[in-house]
Amino acid sequence: MLRPIGFITSCYREKFGTPRQGALVPRSPARLRISPEFIPEQSLEGLEEFSHLWLFFEFHQNTNKEFRAKIHPPRLQGKTIGVFATRSPHRPNPIGLTLTRLVGVQGDTLHLEGVDLVNGTPVLDIKPYIPACDRPTRPRIGWVDRHSVSRLEVVFTPAALADLRRLVPAGQRRRVRSLIADSLAHDPRNPRDRAQLRPDRGFAFFVLHYDVHFRIRAGCAVISSLVPADEAARRRSPLAVGLL
Figure (cartoon, rainbow, N blue to C red):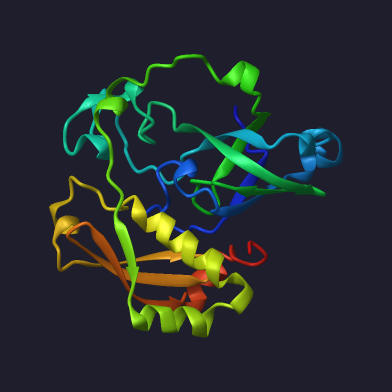
């Protein structure tokens, strides 16, 4: 039986808007606190010497109830391919692997960046990234190499920029703006959901303390406003405190 060694505190509250890979949003902040039963003062010793970590985690928000041998990765725009040739969260066992940057270790807590995990994700194990072992020479990346994903242009309207100035402390504005732009540049919509692809469709996603409202038209994500996340949601997910 697998036991989580800790749980992620992430800048992302829900799956929508969370990057599909951590490297797509390299400054996305998170924390991982190791449970006392795993004696973090001993088990984390030496980890601060590494710059990057592999995190093994559980896709705890999966809703699929049956195994599907072929799936529809967003990059394939509706086409199917075998599940084991993808990094889809919908797997026979809901176990994920992601590479993240270690910013620092503080007591029982790891401070991380470049995280593609939703707040509350159970982490099953940590392994240090070692290039000599983990980076092969001349790797082949199969169908991924034939199906590039274009980036969206991200535009803040004057109203959204005013919200940014009003809501975000001056010393954090550049990082928050970059975090929002990087999160939206890779188009969080599901290409198989026609309702999500309507040009008049409005969206919102939660990041740090804020709900970000936007629309996507002609390859451009236009951010119309930032509003404080509702207090009920913040109580359910007190994730932003101390991340920036």
